[in-house]
Image (cartoon, rainbow, N blue to C red; front, side):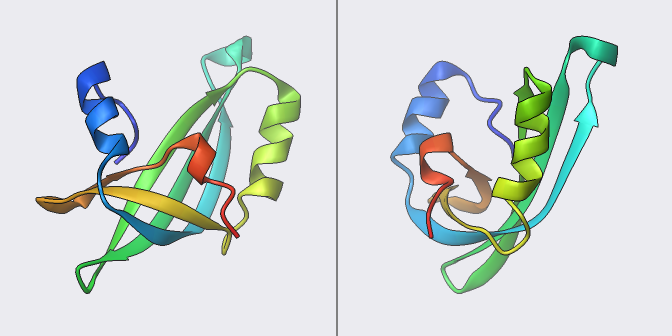
Length: 101
């Protein structure tokens, strides 16, 4: 699940438990013509002995960002996943936790 929360829920999700995760795939596409690009990062993680996956989306403002994302977050890249304690299939990423490993 990507980060599309109300402010209160987003703040609460930062305090959710965390698990090591790994990038599975990265896709960068143009967004609304020439307005920019959108990166979509699919990742996997394990919580409570079960495996899950999630999708993180981010709008990118420049061509440089669009070219940097697939190199920085290539498949296998390690990151930290925050998951909802009562529904571990619900997860999110925070940019400051995406440069683990």
